[in-house]
Length: 153
Image (cartoon, rainbow, N blue to C red; front, side, top):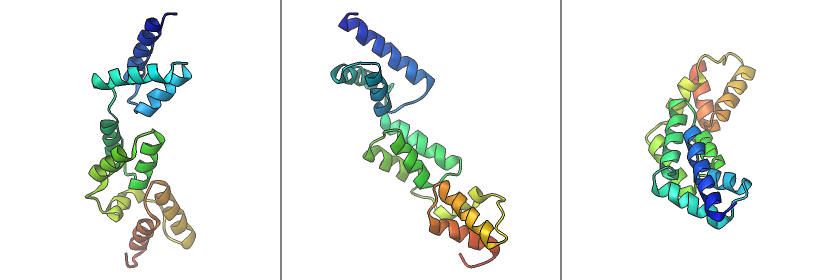
C-alpha cells in the first residue's frame, strides 16, 4: 500500500473513531500506533484533525470535568479520569478549575451521599468510603456523614 493511501486510511480512521466518541490526542496517537502508523505520520494526521477542529484536548477536558460535576462526582475522580484519558496537565488544571473552582466540596458531596445509611459506625465508614470512591476528600466525606448524624461538620 502506498504511503499516501496509508495516510488517507489513517485520516478516515481518525474521523470515524472521533465520530463514535470524543477522544484525546493521546488516545488517537495510541490507536494510530497500534495500527502501525509511524510517529511522524501519526503526528501529521493528528495535526490535520486538530486544525479542522476534530481534536481539541482543552475542550474535551472541559466537557469531561463538567460532566463529572453534573453527575455528582468529586474533583479527584474527575481528575483521575482526565489523566486516564491522556489529557495534559494544563488542560486538566484549567478544566477542573472551571468545573469545580466555585464549588464547596462538602455541598457537592451531600447529594452524592443520597439516602445511604449512616446509622452506625460501620455504615458511616461505608458511606465515607463511597464518597471517597466518588472523588471526594476524606475530610469532606466525614463532614457530610457527621452532618447526617447530627454532629458538627
